[in-house]
Image 1 (cartoon, rainbow, N blue to C red):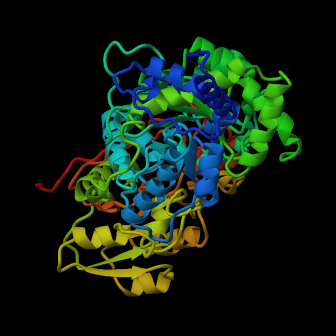
Image 2 (image 1 turned 180 degrees about the vertical axis):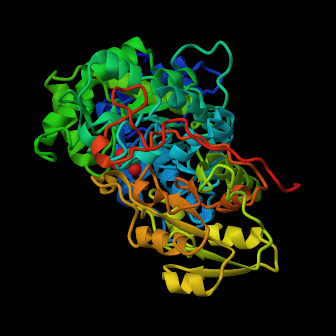
Length: 635
Ligand code: GLC
């Protein structure tokens, strides 16, 4: 600023000074400013931009708001850093990729119209493919991927997911979940790759697929997202969400420090080493301390010890749930979460109070500006690193990748490799599987045989999942069998046949698909872990009258022992997603069964929690169990 005796220059200088101070009137247009220059180093751009930001602009960057609450005024006035789609927040039912891209670009233009023109980043739960989106490929949920024991496959799924997310113009996914579920009564157990932290560690290769391979020699803990065909990820939910008492969701994980480190922590250093861009904090508590208010674990451990340089983001309403009872004393909850070290808050609605209270805490020196600057530096660094300042607008170029055949084939491969064969024949010398493609007449029965929604499970088109075949595109188990068997084989489908019907029709064999109805989060918490009615009676009615292969479609082990002796074969299919053809591939011997249990299969619920390596380990089928078959058909 040149101060000369000339009053005109002085006046101009004063006008600029007061405008910058208010930060509302001057739009920074000059392209010579450092933060707008892609030739400048990221840290130089960050510091230049940070120095120009008002407190309100900084706090706006720390806010993530659901798309339903976004207007041009909100984006411009509050400088909102991120927008998201919650579990079922979509532009419209069966929205097309163009609908998504046009919506996101509208939000982005509003964001770029703010004084400093900082681009927003858009996030969504693409947790088993781009599951919120009509016609997207839905891969097996994580429990099934854990059964594959194939990190390379999971990396490819990450890459396919990134392409499908970009096909809708979105740059950020809240995945992978690196929980270690230790009690299948937990409603989110299917989001966990395994009860074994070593398998969870291996499956963090998903991050490499989703974000891109971090360049050798990259500085430790710095996020890496490489290219417009990749998206930022989120390792979640930090930490110990899978170890809550009795598997009660969002409850308390009571375990000592060594136990937390050995069982629940391993996925995080692994994901950080692979460049994960964000870490999402868990709703749960550790030994009574809410994770969203846990400075020791968020700042002292994740940031200072693990050297994580990315964004620590809250869960949905996670700050509001700090208080007891939840949703009370929001001002104090905001104070506790930011003091703990959270950088971005998935509000997802209350940006007015968030900014108001946080401004008060800063002005009253309860929160130092250095804490705010740490958060905003992390947010801006990820945005600069991802190229959002240079490429803020989403393009239509990736639209053909959504649900493309290549990805569906990948999904089918994942389904094949995820199925675990638990029983094959009533005697070892009389295996039932693989089934013959050529038969006179076969029966396909059960609640899950012809229901795409059921086989996708929760986090599919809606938060809690759906029922039926008209919500998206895919192949049911019935459809897969119909494609696999010889055209002369007659297929009879019956949802819930009685024994007389089965006997009267003289079927060569039956395939029975039963399991759990879709659920997500707390709605999935269970104390009895039973197969949904009338599944058990379908098993007994059919298997009592004809040779039967039972397929259990579930997010976790369920009560099966009472029916096991009646079955000739039993397959755990987990939640396979849209590509049901993979089930037929192994049922009929085009491929062999290779999957291994990623979780202990208990006898009775009163044994829980029960994990391999623990005392009194007396499972129906142990962790790692899985029968194999050889392919019998020429491919
Ligand atoms: C949910 C989940 C979290 C998800 C977020 C956004 O409540 O806990 O896994 O990413 O909210 O949908």
